[in-house]
Length: 256
Image (cartoon, rainbow, N blue to C red; front, top):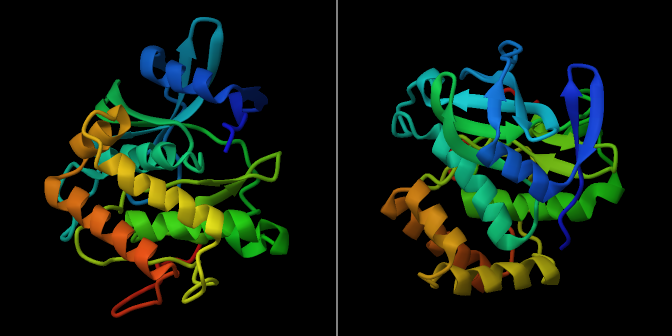
């Protein structure tokens, strides 16, 4: 799958389109400037910031570790790593469904910095139609693999190219089964052949200790989390089907 162009914004009312790799380089090497304030949704601190690199500048969501609310079931201070790990997993699969994200130092300490996707907040999972099914099948497979415990409808952003971007992955990669999602449309169905092929290829990549993305993912997660993800991958590939809900809670709240 080819890397998409990214519809973001230069300022609060200045939509622009940037190259995918260019955006990643800017996140990694550029300056994180000008906090525009807290983004109003979410239980953890998320700041809208400007990233500037060479002659380019665009908006990004900055989630500092120090702004994470302690949770009983996830280790403290790890949500920003999980946000970044989700992006790395998307890269390894070459699905490019998670906006470019990097773990780095910024004004409030280390945290995840993710390019802002320009979108209409009134368009989300619950407003999509049948034309979006292939994209949603990929996202559902991704969530099963990453063990996403918080796939709300509003975490599926639709850009100007009708592409769905998947955001908010702080509650992922837990070693215990915690899949909570609104996307149960495909439960028990066969995973499409192209998606299954990519997942089979990932099995090989995860065994390659010389692969830089594999090693980056390993460093972002705890060893038991990495191994648990491999086991989920093996199970999904062997079954060839999307998981069924349960046991336990299987939908996030609120749904959007």
